[in-house]
Length: 97
Image 1 (spheres, rainbow, N blue to C red):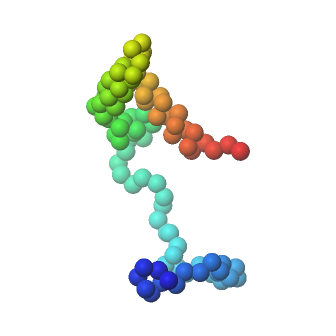
Image 2 (image 1 turned 120 degrees about the vertical axis):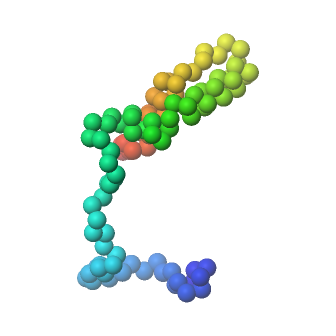
Image 3 (image 1 turned 180 degrees about the vertical axis):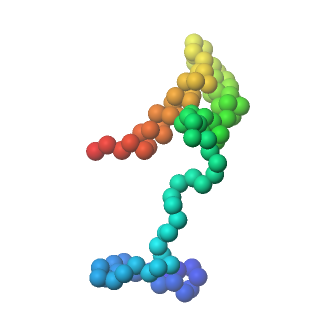
């Protein structure tokens, strides 16, 4: 029984010979619906979510902490952090077996 005291959860699968109810079917096109220019690059789109100012703050704190722990620390740049985040995103999307 769910928290709302109305929904009853079950592990039984629905029968395979039934149709999906119409209200459960997505009928809209998937993807973005805003006016994003067609010539916008992936990095430009990413920078809308992670602007240079935010990356600069993360780089500043990273370098500050690292220099306090390791005196011969080579400072990280904004480009290196963008590359690192890009690799993490790519590895999360491109799952190979």
